[in-house]
Length: 469
Image 1 (cartoon, rainbow, N blue to C red):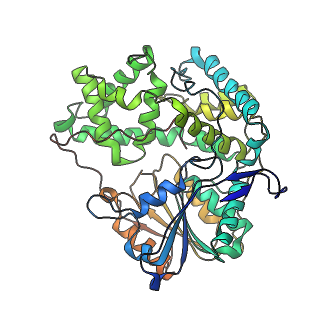
Image 2 (tube, rainbow, N blue to C red):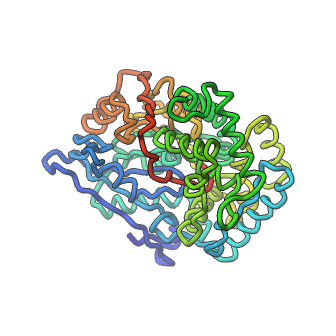
């Protein structure tokens, strides 16, 4: 799809936006189009549409069959993301080198300088294009796509950052919304949307880590890292401390930051709990770092560089940020006291503090003129803390909130088969297909946690993120 770079100049420069459609599996039951957004700032809607609709090895699909019958599943790589002309700011090897660790006070100057230099490079290389890559233009692209598809309305399934996209679309085009699911929401009103989300993850992230290490302790017969949280925590601290003291790998480019890229990104979802624990056991007990290095060694190359540029371009433009280093470091010092990796998210603030494109005023949802909306959240979500979901629910008077109780996972509906919540699947499908919502806000039982066995092979390499959502 061709879209204007600047909607105030529709005949001016254009951008290419990649779109995919998986047609309804039962035309007689088709009721419309379902746009899906995976969140992440730089998550690919095209890839996520495939993930939700393509059967897993056992035949399970993340979207129930009745939903696939009822909708064309539409994936869109937002402008500047994935296959939709992602920006490039630095050389392909910029992120393949060892990154300074801001959790070490002596490296904070270098970390700040690295990200500030990166911001300047983005401005020099991308110029005026950067200011057009935020959510305000993404929702205009969605409206344009809906028209090109010949549809009057869309239904929408958005996760995490995708909840901001969905509510922004609903605020600008409420008459074009049919049904909407918002799963694990960002805060509806915070002017410093991305900054407060990054600082707001620190304490929930520590709680999530404790849950994970306590889970490892319950299966000492598999991992042999200790029978208590304290024992497993000591094993974790040994591994992190080793990588913090000196770089590892053939090119000496794997340190604490590179290790955290894998670790933090994947403890949010239980899918990779077992292989991460086995990698830790290999390192701590057998002095075998091969699996850790396989996961944590930065890939470098154009794809990683594009991904980080996309992520920063969205986050930095979408909302206001503190402009001075003193404020940022004061906040992180206060929030990170006693944490192993509390400064991990400072990369966002370091890059966005003086972003060359400036910052948009965020779109605040009013909730006016919207149809009934279904929301999901979990009580101990460390990526988009549950308080954000509650705040979003209060802002949207037509919404009903389904909470997965006693759960710390990130996102509920449409999870992988092994971690699916059958009750959430039933509620989501009933709403999307028939428009039926629970009578009021409800809590549902959590999905099962993994049960590891000593004979289970380590899983594939976890998905890595260079900075958290």
